Length: 271
Image (cartoon, rainbow, N blue to C red):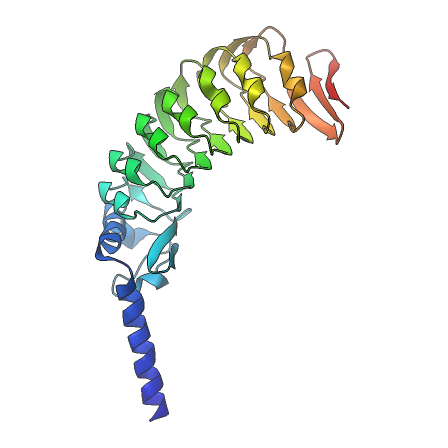
């Protein structure tokens, strides 16, 4: 009798867990599954099982708050229904084979603080609506096929700590208003087709720890005022059209940052 009761309780718990997520969120997950060849995923979902057993899905208080399907052989595009995951805070679809544009419906996902879509095959321009995701702290779109300019709207994401747009086909200049991103710790724009000068406003990023701008068409000089950024540990600006052939900048000790040129070492920050 006890065994029967325990089995019944486990069954009821499973039913409650399955039903705890809203129909809207369930529909969004199934749309993603159908749009990205779900049966062929490395870790596929049993659509008849409770959603809390689905690989990569994290549920808190009956809400889907995290979706991590990296390295999972997703093929296809992100469906517009993804925006029905309105409580989502983390979306990680990196290391897959996703293509196409990012659906504009994603602009309503105001709870997102981490968007990881790197190492896919997304194309088109980085959409202007990306600036609507006002709570983003980490945006990683590198190693895709994005074209066009860095949207000005990105400079309104004042909570950003990490901005990684490298290894795409981005053109134009680095937005002068990049200085709005006061919380930024890592800025990586390497391996694109960016041109023009490195904006002097970049020295206003007082929390910056890594600046990676290698392999572009940037010209002019590296702003000397970067030497005033006490937290800066790494600068990579080689393979550009800069007046000096900077190779790298490293932090060799807690008190010194050295800037290496082609022929000499120049200390640019020392307490």
